[in-house]
View (spheres, rainbow, N blue to C red):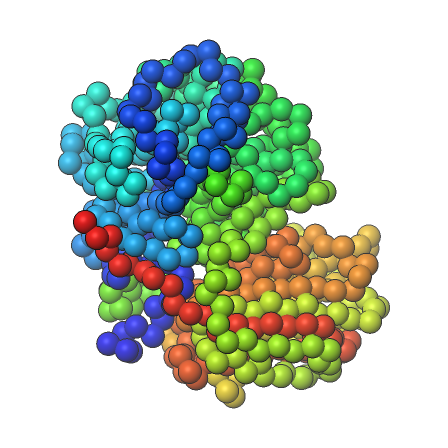
Length: 574
Ligand code: DQQ
């Protein structure tokens, strides 16, 4: 049993067994006081955005005993994708989770072949509504349905009803009905509720826009909100406002001058996501990405590693926008079957706009810090070329590390080969890994390492000097992570736009048996790797800081915490 569980995560969300994928519904944050009854079809059509925002502000002081609801795609019958239902867990803090019976599962003609991804909207009168994709035949024909709680006074929202007037949206003749899914949370603008549905027209990725005055009758807008040639199917679109100043999140209906919009899509061709920042023209119902941003596969990513089908939601109790992503396994299907489970949800992250306005920033939610136990600290530790120094944290296989490195100058940065500009960062990392000696870097962490380094997952920086500026690569390289066979071991990496004037770079890594989730330069970049060490497991796993560059690096400060286990998968008492 122990061997079987070698790679189960300690504090990342997983159910006891079977397959999981996309976090759904945007875990909705319920406020018990807001369960006034199921009146969501009686919304005043003149309700405008200002009132909508104001409503939340007024509601906030009435908040008590809030619960976060996490729904996710789940196969109740096995460790491979299939038989998809919406599994359901609840939490008071996004870290400790109690489980419930699946909220939505195939039971009607309009979802008999599967209940695929979707989103929840908490309506101004307090009732949540879930939109999801129903699969109606063996050809995977897709329509959009809604479900509502059977009993709004039950804070756990155990039972969901799928009314008989479903579906809310059928694909018309111009839409590809087997590539038409994953409705978003609704927002209110110009007298209408609006949602997006992900799709493609041939190779063009499309976010169709649907509008409704009463939340019941939905009509397709003349134009999609946005589409991009050559990107293929847009799964799990996510569209939300971010504030131009500060870290506070915004309700989806907030518009105006102090706001930018984000459009994120998940590309099924590559299993990568990208996002752009831009402007939402609420009159034309069009989205225009900012100039200079890449609107396609090589665009900005929320995470440069194993991270897919992500969703954000607005948490009115803390005024944050919170991001969830799913990390698939990187081992073989047979290994998943043997271990009896596949897929984890990553730690929820707060997201907000960088003051430059050019990218998002992310950080693991502060609640995670409650799990921090025994701590080890280092400061002013010099690392010469070839050094690796152990950080003797009690549970290096289940830890949280936060480190700031400094260096005396940028002079030794290696030249940036112009040929690399055309490569994915992952390929640059493959050429310039953690062992290849450099100038300024490689330096960073060796996570999930065996004592003699037969296995280790390095997370490290390399600084290069290009014609106009320095380029900073963050790499989370799984190639040396395991002696096991049949594993996908990519050298995930991304370039991070960071100001080096203070000659410091910071790194935080959440290490959890088979996952290393890292945040570079204060959340300017995130990379997640799934890894399966064979010897660097449990108490045999170690953690090191290292430097293989000729420039001496100083560990200015390092904190490493053993992470305790949260409550997970404890059934809610009936
Ligand atoms: N997973 C769901 C789809 C979605 C895909 C099916 C993304 O709705 O497009 O399980 O991972």
